Length: 492
Image (cartoon, rainbow, N blue to C red; front, side):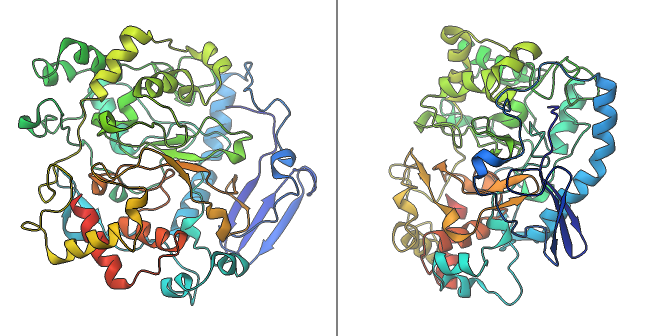
């Protein structure tokens, strides 16, 4: 999107941050405020009234319909890309240990190694045990909330939009000749911390077939040969629509796109690869101004037939609502006006939406051979003692089952963790970290196949996730209990 605005800018340098701010109550347009000797996630003094005083025009709810020529947009944004990516990658490196360290003997459904270990970096001299012994108010007062536990901003918070991992871009281009590359930014999370591609596909209607993907990424070039004779004509037509590209905010035929050449658009399965996820992300379309929008990582569609709430933070009540909303709303950053310009695709609810939902409802969780089929809890004859102890922590001291109840390990509700109890609001690479709001309880079945975690992907491993909830829920788990809980999560 192209706007005449003065966004917050963080420039990560050696030992310092320079913040350019034009919000009310702060320095005027173009003024500089220096925060010396601070890492990339350092606190900036928030404006007195953040929701009112951000540096956005009064018409920020709607994007401009008239934009500069494409050549001008392309030149400006490609020139800005190197510094933008340097800033975002510096943030990632300051927050996380990004080394490739796979867990021994733990893989995703098709064999990709799962990354192990806590990757969130702690301030010097601080340990997880020290943090767990503190109250939320004490962590906030001492400014000790770990950097990797703050909301994770979009690679370019001002621009937003879909960003696809390179492996998805390359395979789509190979099969279809359609290019999902953005000229203005790149993906920011290393491939080692993403789901495997292509993911396995399991069908509730044909459990006997196991993985029906045949090791292929499903696209409009191969969906028919892969699924003819396996699913009904209705579901096959729904899959056709799920792999059909439609205009989207950054990928369309207009001059204010973010693809170098005019694009036919994006498909549902460009993010929900094989009905699962590839870790693609964008911004939640509901909040404004842009600085308050949350990064949203693509959730898996596995097991949606057993869910009653859809969208990470959108509280949509049916998979049909979710399907229609994505094309009418999220595809265009929640702006139906700009969607009409770029090619809003109005789906027929009784046929197209119903057929797309029908296929999605066939997508099953991966097999879990150590769980009993009836209640999806551990079969003692197959489980290790470590896994059994982990299950006891999960349903007991860990309080995990309060939200993640068997059999799908979700309660089909949203919960506000109120993480802002632990820190003072601050601006991070253009995003105001002022709390997360309600988050859908994601099913934990097959969870090792779906990194990174939480709605915005800020938690790279399950180890990180355990440490996060140990603090948020004030559980005070021992190191042994954490290891046991991790072992249980691996077998779900």
